Image 1: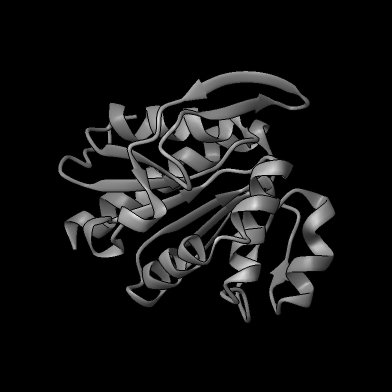
Image 2 (image 1 turned 30 degrees about the vertical axis):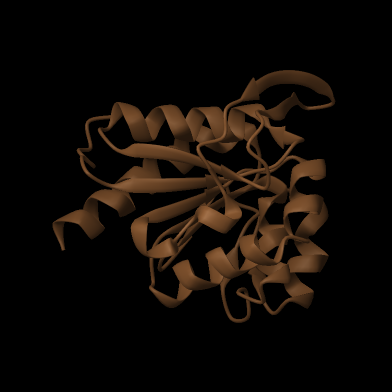
Amino acid sequence: MAQDIKDLNVALLAVDGFEQSELLEPKRAITQAGGRAVVVSAKREPIQGMEHDEKGEKVDVDLIFAEADATHFDAVVLPGGVVNADEIRMHPQAQAFVKQMAEAKKPIAVICHGAWLLVSAKLLNGRKITSFPSLQDDLRNAGAEWVDQEVVVDGNLISSRKPDDLPAFNRELLKLLQSNKAA
């Protein structure tokens, strides 16, 4: 991926139970394009990744929610994983962070079950989004237009359904970061 996003900071919000590829692949794409990928979580200890229903790698945490200031970031990535997505939505500081990113019109990239945080933060009314199919009722009930597509870009909101969609998700994330940098 040739996009140059040097000097851009991207927060990746996750807790234990995140879908490993949905955090690690965007993180790799961001750093390979010259950006800084910062893992933000509820605790300082490494967080446990999952490969579907099997334990995967643990990932080091760079900042905790209480330390993360949305003004220092250019975008946020919300990986899925059912356990991760169900827990992170209960953290008021995670909700506040994504609300601040939305208010600043910064890119919010969400994949799979990660959209649950946006539901709890009340950020989906009138937005077009995709997700893992089992979330479609939750997203529609939150006021979103849910579609079944590989990747959806609705202004500053990028969404994808599942790990198979990561190439398109990463491409659109880097494209939006690059266009925002050039602006």
